Length: 331
Image (cartoon, rainbow, N blue to C red; front, side):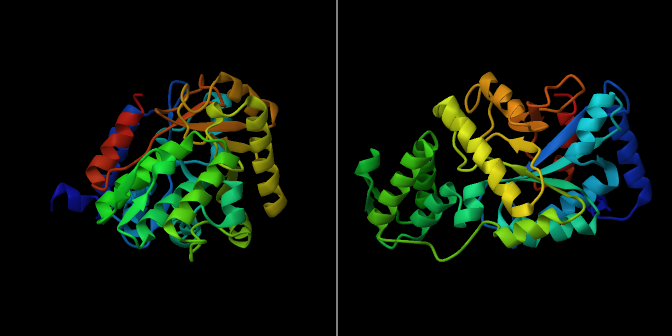
């Protein structure tokens, strides 16, 4: 039996060995660290152009490894352990960004299978409208019937979108351009794109409905957090607009689930590029207990509760997945 096969086996001696190895990297105590994992979509089938997605089977394999080797804790448990300075060995927190419907239909059954807690950071407007704006751009370009579209209004000239790879590239370029726009200008740009392509609306909903969000919030091992109302890049809008957006996103989700929202995820999430120190202070003033970034690294007792680093487990190979999590404890 090869090493890859062992990661799919029930050989208890193998899992004990991995737990021992990982304990040496992440022992209990004041100097220990917590790795916070970021996920977005969990798909029923693979979509190669969706680079930030994972299939349900792949997610199941990863959660099997996580459950057998690591100590999975909720975001609230993580904060309590950080305050106490007594962090369990091999600690991991599982998080999801944005609020995709497949988090409910594909990810939740796997989490329940292994009895794992997780936190879901939800974009308010995505629940309200059924789509996240960047997915709208992606779907519009990939569903466009003309093989050539005129994107001069966006400074991109005429684009021939003759195959999936080209459509993916054009989608990425448009998303990059739209990212820095305030929400009202972003919405205007997407309306222009719809007009160019000749599509008034898309025929599918990717995001959680309010009813699905309520059901998720009722799961005892699931924590719901906020990811703003409109998913703006906070560093590109004024601090007053940023505060209003964050506050509205928090209040909107609270209105739906009838529970306080105490945890936050910065849109895009890179410190110094997508948000700054003033935004950390703003999040604290709005009553959140924590805020997570997309800056790679682990978390220790000295970490700011409003600057919790995370890690994206992109490896499909189980050996690489395991090793990369182990390496993250040293960051």
